[in-house]
Image (tube, rainbow, N blue to C red; front, side, top):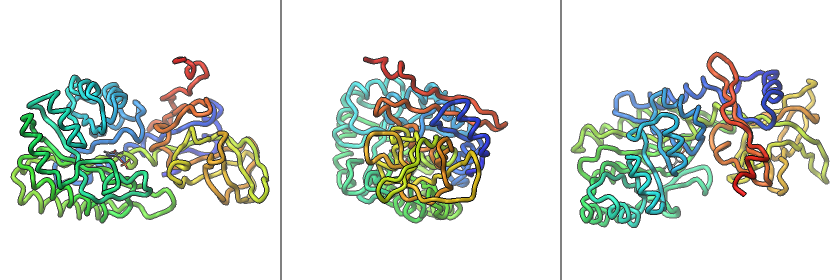
Length: 402
Ligand SMILES: *Cc1c(COP(=O)(O)O)cnc(C)c1O
């Protein structure tokens, strides 16, 4: 999936749009959407793309064309979803710790909310007695590639503990609320299908405590191989998941319940690469540094999660030599490291750095730290044309609110 751009095309794109630059491939994006919508052919399944992974509106439009729904976690994401053409009933607002006024705005849009505490359920009940609601549960187990992305289990802020099911029922009754669904999301980036299936069993157990649910949202977290691991086995996941869901449906009172999955990363990660420019090579005591213009304001995952991204050097003047570099950016912090001790092609100033699997949690986490611009984003269409889908920040745009 890394081959949608030739080396020459990378040089041309940087000439045309500037550096650094996010580039996305339409074909890969659509392929990943189809894999998710086709995951459970024998079950009533909706795929809710979790837009925090990448909120570019042009990408959202294509995701909509592929038949996915979306979730939103802020009014900004909700607005992006609307702009991309999603209707209110194709959006779920999966939020935590929001203000009453934010809740009111979401209700005005006619979008279904998922709340994740008894206290937020009370706030909702007071605002919208008799209304529809989804509740996020936390079955007490979590999974993920880093503590910061484990979103279920006893050590996270998310969801309602299953021991509080009776209290949930009391609040529902007090405000005459209609519980239309329950959800969970236990963490991000699993590559072993068993951990997901185990998590699903937990939410299904919780579902048996509520009659007539219309939606059971099984969560996201579907991983992609950043470091040459085996791909997630979707065929096996499909078979095992189908089995568990069939068993559940046999006993559940509403046979028309719709299952949701909520992939973020899986949809957008592999369609994106990040291009940058080599700006210096230097020896500092025992380390050879390759300096480039991709600071952690552009790609935050390495400094935030110690994440690994595959990096390659595209040489302007090809040779076969290799060198071990620590690849660093242009931010004035020592943690600004894109990759440590990487054996790469020997680089010269002006060569190009390409970072793979940059489509998820790349641009959406980018910032103006050090008052640097967030990069531009370009789409490579099916017929292999490049189009600008988001401009680079300008100095002016960054000063706008002062
Ligand atoms: C972030 C998030 C997702 C998506 O997670 P991925 O690991 O990107 O698939 C799904 N559901 C919720 C509630 C989330 O917060």
